[in-house]
Image 1 (tube, one colour):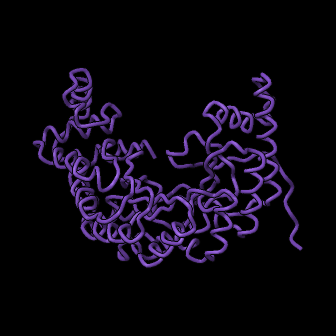
Image 2 (cartoon, one colour):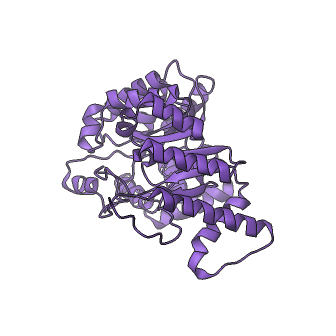
Image 3 (tube, rainbow, N blue to C red):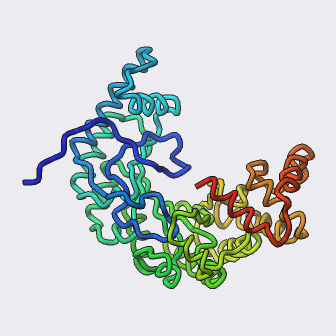
Length: 369
């Protein structure tokens, strides 16, 4: 019998989706069981492990106890449990509405163990409306429909999947460890289980070579799945990932913002027959305002991108600098005199030219990873 490691206190992982910013973070697994994607450096050199169920339940009890103390007016705690107390305080402040299971793929746990955790969360925090998790499509495809339905009944009601692309050539190049068929099968299984599904699309991940294929194949897969949410996550390449080496050698040819905009436009134009909500909820995205429900808001979303592409080169570059420096959130910000002045100062300070704009933007985007 394997010896269970001793409980060493509350743990919190390094990441959660932006949409889970107000959620209580409960760490069920550590790091990533796959950890080979060429664009991701988050878990490099980190060993994956499953946390013992008793440890996860211990974390839940600790948070529950602190919440009761906070409700009774306690505002501080000793340094040993500061992280847990802060997590409890933040959750109380955000209304205690949602819980996110960390780290990258909680569904790799034994289904029975995950159901125990989900049931315990429901018992301890009955007012929470949503429990969510990241998961790999490869993992979900191997879970029986019966077990997925058990998870749903126990309280798991949203899953985030990093599809990134559904083009098999792109998936192979980035070592995603899955293919289009598996992505589609996994997405359909989640929906069939009655669980909300967020699928992530990564514009630019195919580079110049596979930009069109990345847009069309991913749109085709999502048309077959009809996820509740399609979330845009534009590619940025930090210098600690394998893809950066390919970038340095020229094996991977990145696209500039206008080319990525064309890819996103083609992608949205190719989404047909689905009722998904598109979200652009990340600072890496050029167009924060490209959000809406399909098919109702499709023309409004594409019109934003078409408007950007119709700008002259100087205006495009000014918007890029304004957006990448955090000044702009929408195209109309170009017409705001104050914001435009700040953006023009940055534009001048960076000595922006058509020849260096992509390099400057790449460096600015890496700050947000």
